[in-house]
Image 1 (cartoon, rainbow, N blue to C red):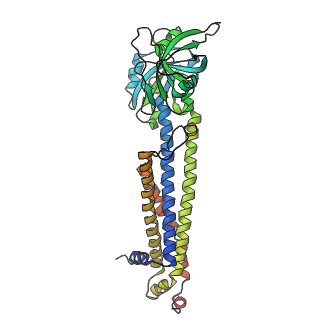
Image 2 (cartoon, rainbow, N blue to C red):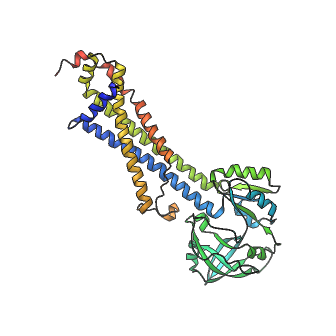
Image 3 (cartoon, rainbow, N blue to C red):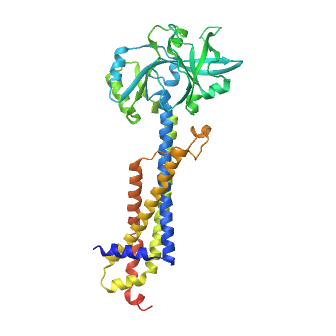
Length: 409
């Protein structure tokens, strides 16, 4: 029998109706809230980062291949490169690559009913597809026209600003360098997408790649760049380097979205800093509460300590009794904290009752993404840290002398 554990468990269960039981309840509640806040913070930060990344990747892909020295925003002004079917097959066969599609970008002005909006038109082929990270309404671009499709797809924000509805006809003005008059094309709004990301929604529109090739007077097969989608975004840098080293020839270069949208990903990394601060504060709160509770228990049960010492129990065994106290209190608090946090996460996923401003946060509800190893590490770290930090308060046991405490009833 583990005598220190038996004594700790028995005494903990017998603490009813006195000051010690109140302190124990306070310590359990504090640990519960601390663990719950830590799990919720990790889940919300993880969900927020995953949602933003999914929205960005859904529209732009994970990797772009285009001429070196120009980023995605400058592909509209770069000279064309010839589409290479052999290169496409080689890249498509790279493990982790799920989709590759060429595209052309060109700036233009969309005009409807006296309202005008400057947009970056992205010409895509028929095999271009939206992922589930983007909401879509209306119809996709119809590529049945032998010349080029007159359909375009706008963001909901742009459509609302221009008061355009699906099926409405509008005009695009393409400005030519050195020309007095723009080139004009009539187009029809086929569908509307919505990412809630201002970087994507505000200035982007989709159209037939053949329309931009025609308006730019490019040859058949000329493109601005390739867009790649991956099975795992964490492999983007590794796959981009592999493609660059094994398949690309200058001036082509592979760029990850982390490089292209560095400001967005830097902002997402700041979320980890916020989560670390919250975790540190909650861990300190849990440790302080347990330490105070343990000191009070030791002081209140000094008579029991004296009796056990008089009967031959060593100081090390006595310390183990109170460390088991701390472990049991922390264990109960950790379990309750898990139930509270995971219950909140489940409720939010089912109902979405916690709302956000889409303008500020790019989403309408608080995203929860529970990663089980995060929960497990949080629980174990909290338990071990609390027990380790309880070693100092138990040193007080050495100062308790049986002769002094047993002389009082």
